[in-house]
Image (cartoon, rainbow, N blue to C red; front, side, top):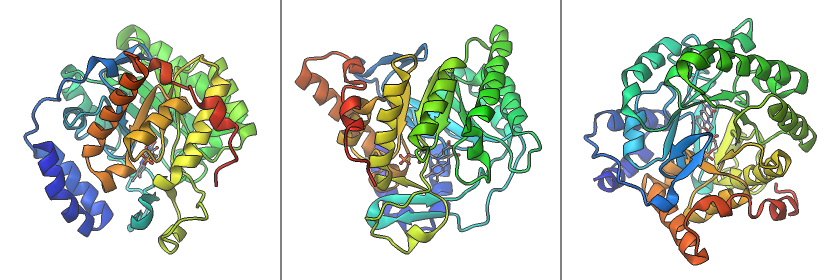
Length: 364
Ligand SMILES: Cc1cc2nc3c(=O)[nH]c(=O)nc-3n(C[C@H](O)[C@H](O)[C@H](O)COP(=O)(O)O)c2cc1C
């Protein structure tokens, strides 16, 4: 059923403006009578951040920005869903067009700029589905015109902790001017101190909500040293590596589209994102787990992400090119790899290649 829907819809979606296609995909997920999620092979299950994931394949933030379809996404086979980025107040984002496909490269450039219906609308939906179960992380961000961006994060943690499996502090979108400056050491230390404090305050009512930090793949290694050091000392529960890149690899085929401003994601992001993931993994020294995102477009690239250091993975852009069939492909590849290695869970793969990846020539 899902496969059929997917195969019928994709050529049609590709003929549309990318943002219209996205809007339509959300509508289809909202109204399609999807059967319950298939039960995953128990060898794919993992316990990470104190949560039980049925499988490690998540959908990254930005697809369901307003928490409209988390349960449909769980039904199509994702092990977890990250909704958002949600900002405190509604905001419209940048003018359209602001989403571009690089067809020949299997890449995407976006400069959406945190278009969000705001916290009230998302919270209402999340409260309504709170009893439904499944792992739903909530990605939060600051309003563009906010006078106190740190206060925006604190406020969102306080409001969403009770309905979030985990909260992601997104300071790595390239499309809100100045946002990524929050990754600078002195600012980040204050931000994380206040965010973790907010989480502690909500814990008596909301329970222990893991706080994750999502970083840009464009950090220098020196900056990464600082970011990981602060994340460790402020005791965040994990990191997501990472967001889209402002870089443009020299081998892109769609050279005209590549000139559009915004963050690049999808296949061309994989080498840089994987390298930054491995660099993060070796710095974290097992203190907390990582989610790997960026350019996963096959079972092999998903396994590569886990071997580079990811306990869990997230996909987004490749769904545009590969469709929902990618989820089953990834799961099958992971199960084949387990069988070939005689393992009964994925833990031994996590970070197995991290040191080797960090020794490679720097990707460009
Ligand atoms: C259209 C689009 C919108 C996105 N919006 C967000 C967002 O709101 N918040 C966020 O943290 N990441 C956002 N991302 C980044 C993704 O979550 C992910 O980190 C990145 O795209 C790399 O994964 P991919 O190569 O599989 O797409 C967005 C990505 C795309 C393509």
